[in-house]
Length: 243
Figure 1 (tube, one colour):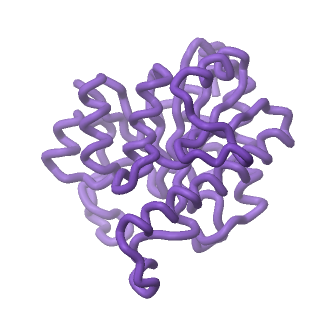
Figure 2 (spheres, rainbow, N blue to C red):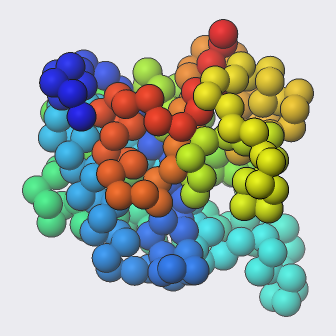
């Protein structure tokens, strides 16, 4: 990290984290060490004075591919996933609070006895006071991904950039874990991602970012320090933007 990055605190960012980041080596359930590591890196970003929002998924508990044997309707499956994002948000909240980072969970799904409900405005006060806000429950509607929720919340908090955490170091022409010849891109336009069908985020999320000229940085969050570096402004991974 450079001194310039350390001083770059007049920014608002939103992390999109997968639930698998909080899980065990297989990305399932919750793992105390994994959660603590993520919280450590986010706390460094928040303590640098950067207004920080977070959207987290629920795939460590339940993904579409696991639902076949449960005889669930698509709607019920989505609703279960929304609830799991709330559980993950609470786990990360508690880890951040233990590190003296003021943190609030706001859920699109109303559970007033457990978490605050997203109201579209109070998050700014928390961010301005140096706290972190974890947005849970997706968009509050079924059939929308947490990627779309992340784009929506990033726009609502006026984020300068959406930081999309993945398990690879950027966007590739194909899956680099399956094809050694896959080409990594340092920069792409929104249209590149959509036309080439580069499945790093769903099309709705990318289109929303394009409409609002919100840059997306796709980075590897599984490496030590990855979350901290991009949160502080380093140019890891792949940047998706207008030009």
